[in-house]
Amino acid sequence: MRDPKPSYEALEKRLKETEEILEVVQRGEGDAFLSKGRYMVLRNREAEKQLLKSKAQIMQLNQNLDARVKERTAEKDVLNRRLRGMSQKLVRVERDERNKLSTLLHDHIQPLVVGARMQVWELQRNSDPEAANKTAEKLEKALADVLSALRSLSVELSPAALQNNGLSGGLNWLKTYMQEKFGFTVNLTAASDLEPLQEEAAFLLFEGVKELLLNAAKHSGASGADMLVRRTEADLISIVVADQGRGFDPAIIRDETTETATLGLFSIQERLASIDGRMLVETARGRGTKVTLTAPAGEKRHPPLPAHSDADTKQADRSIRIKGDMVGILIVDDHKVLRDGLKGLLQPEPDFHVLGEAGSGKEALELAGELSPDVILMDINLGDMHGVEVTRKILSRHPEIRVLGLSMHEDPDLIKAMYDAGACHYLTKNEPSEKIVAAIRKCMAGH
Image 1 (cartoon, rainbow, N blue to C red):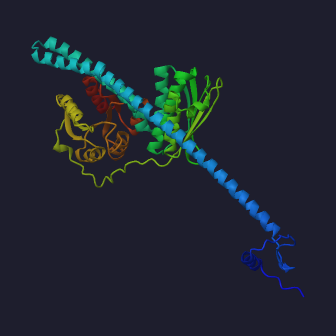
Image 2 (image 1 turned 90 degrees about the horizontal axis):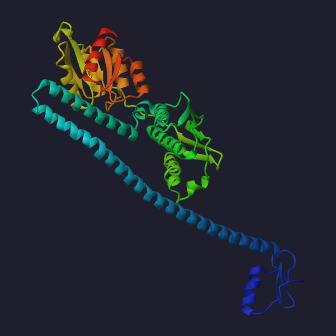
Image 3 (image 1 turned 180 degrees about the horizontal axis):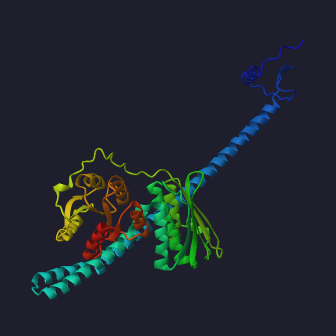
């Protein structure tokens, strides 16, 4: 009778104890038995195959992991080189922009201011009224030139249309700017449902489109570009800018040695990525360029209007102020020096009486009810609120008041918004004083 089969582990233990060399017999699927004084160990061939297969898989996984680590390390090195190169170039761009701004101030604006100051000295010394009037005219022209230069600089840095009218207003302004400054025609098609839009997204999209159009105007050889702006079903703002110019090799976007691409398209791509946006470039040499920018719309936050009702408004009796044909005026501007200037301009008029001044939108809403002015001179940028919204609120509560828009802005969309809000007239602050006085009288006359 055959001995019972010992376990594989038992045979292996006895083998180690006797140091007897055994022939390994492979038979069956793992049986172990004792035959003719020798220990016969039957190994499981399927287990061995599985073990070899597992070892091969582990080796392959290790090789793949090593390859991925090397790939990621190489990508990191490339990104670091690109970022270092971009940082250096951004420093140069910042330096160039500072030099440009310094040159404008030193060579253009400062001489105008110095000249104006000299004319003031001349006025102080001149006792001849006719000569004083001529000097005053020269002084006014010099100050108007300073104002024009500063306005141009302000527009270059950040257009008021974007701040006041959102992305739609900014893109319309950009269309006009490209035509007037570069003769580059932009065919703009924009959906009407772009707002509300998060301010940061609007700014980055505007800056991206501006960079694309400037690149196209300078480098594509095309005379214009098409722009399509829409809100997608996924609540993304999508802007497509396409030209039929000479195109380029899209690989330069990732080339850290390429000046324009690194600071231009790569910069747009990186900035949009910071708000979960993206840029898609479709181009080839000789086949034009199509760039799509997308960014999440988000929510545009407006500062809440102060709670207000007609019942809470203190209606001052008009008998407490000067009667007759006097025009009561409220000046609304967030700069005291301008409020003082307007007050000094209007007070000498025999039929004008400045009832008060407001330095914010909230204060304007309160004083409109307390003072019951005939005319309000309304600035656009009031810090806490927008002048268009303040105008709309005041006229909804006090329809008898006339609001005259008076601002630095010359943007047609902004002017239209003021008229749509109910303003009787709109002037820029660089208009001659007599024109401002005449506009107030026209508003009172209903013209």
